[in-house]
Image (tube, rainbow, N blue to C red; front, side, top):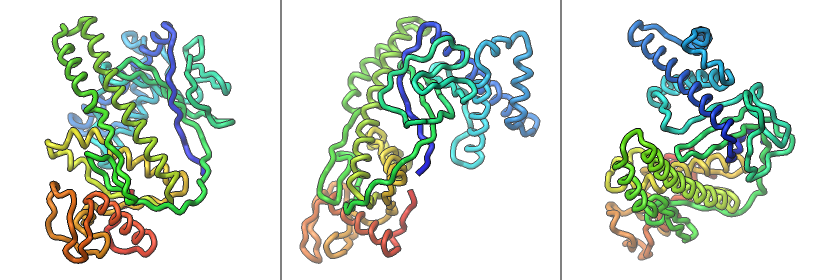
Length: 377
């Protein structure tokens, strides 16, 4: 199966490369923000549509002006790509997939995208345009043999770490079929409960670092704005956030890979995570769990490796239905963790019973097309 795949590596720039990257990030950010203002003013003040080609022409004219001559000091490719990203952002907005584009800040994550014409790749080293030496990349894994790189995106996060993401063509082989089938019920105390009876504890990556984060944020709030000490304190906060995000991502990737390797059919309940976050008592824990990212990983890994992922409608009464006889109780508050079926007398763990019902519904959708309001993931 031919796919586009990105490989992300950390690298350590030299002082000269740091200066050039800072200029490149700044020029790309300026082009994005300037053209966003141009397009916004053209529409709201003159009712005039401005697209990518108009912004590209405006950028060319801008570079010819003496006060903006500094735009020519960096590679033109990342600056031009910023306009393409702006066009994509407007496309997502008009398709109702995202909110209206917002201005980029120098305090957030910085990124610059280089196409194949703006870098040199010899299979071992990567050299960007306007730089004298290749990047000192830490190759944590091996790229595919004869990989043809199409883009190289260089980024710097709020913690001051530099990364390069290499997009290339890759071939993924379908994994051999297995007999395993599993239903997954997602929760907070336990991150995932399987139809096999296994319960996976929630990693609680944010909760574990919350006390330390509060301490660092209080120190940051007391620093004078614009001072070097405030910059150092902000970097410490960003590093702790990065540590939390990395730990969560590592947990989700390991669990999703394991499930895809062991099971041919995976059934999971479709959850409206954005709506669930409106409950302020649970919003922090739901965000910390990373349910949406977990399902996203299951979706693309299942597609790559020939597995079947089935989504069950969020209104399916998985917790209130007896997995043995099919009896459905009327009410079941969240505080009820175990219950006995009045029809057949079976005693159920609420979450394991829900996972078994999710698996049964998923198999019905997969094999017989039963009506359980399946949702495509």
